[in-house]
Image 1 (cartoon, rainbow, N blue to C red):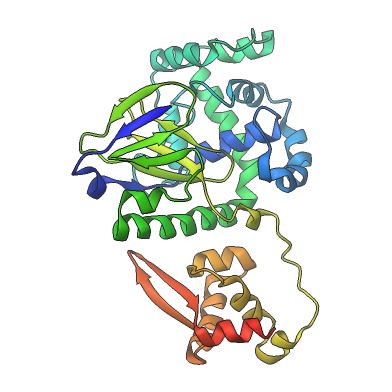
Image 2: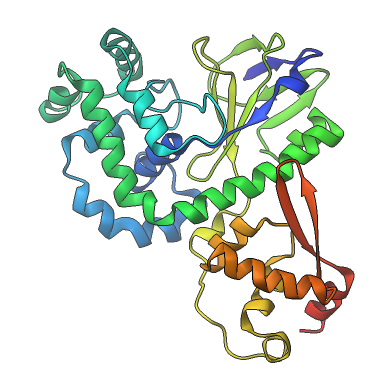
Length: 324
């Protein structure tokens, strides 16, 4: 079990982030059979043909070999977010800037306890340009597996951030951790996480970076060279594979139009225009136009939460959906 001791200044210093390369490496581990599929079975089936087209890439195979459910992962391959709003290109640049001696140390630690790699994997992992080879493998995995779904993926984690950051700011640690994972507890100023290993860490005023992810369960990056980071599965991952095909005509759609009916249905929880755009596969501008009509009709309302604007159904909208 990991114990993270929280001090008086850590609440204000804590933040949330998006880590594209953690998602890339975790998704590769899932589709390659190195990680449990969990609730992601429908996504795995959908992307399996794309994975087969790149699965023979030696760097990709080396990255999948390094992935495991428990134990240390080479930090330079899966860097936690050093600042908000990082892109894949930003994180790949961070990977490529890793000094070779650091990469060698982290890879040696990662390989402890794993089976002996075959010759083609050793060629990659022992190469003088191993950092560039693994960065190129991550980029290949990104383009094949996640880039087409990134708008939906990002909207899933951003929606989770809005929800949990609001709870952290308004109610504190216990409320923010409630429902985050069945393996996480708040106990008298200490975050307890049922993670493989046994260690105690003190935030010391630096705060904790929360990173919601789609393709992994609970994890932590608590090495001194990185911001202290806790990763957890975001809510609403089913949006990756739920059908977006138009449904048959119904009474609500005839009354307000198909898109507005879909908007009212997915606004069971507050959401941003970017999340709604990704969820319904429409432009942000188009979503905004429909939301304006629904707002003028008294069916949705909006409010600011930090830097985001959240839309939610009104009581009238709830009644309309209930009568659907």
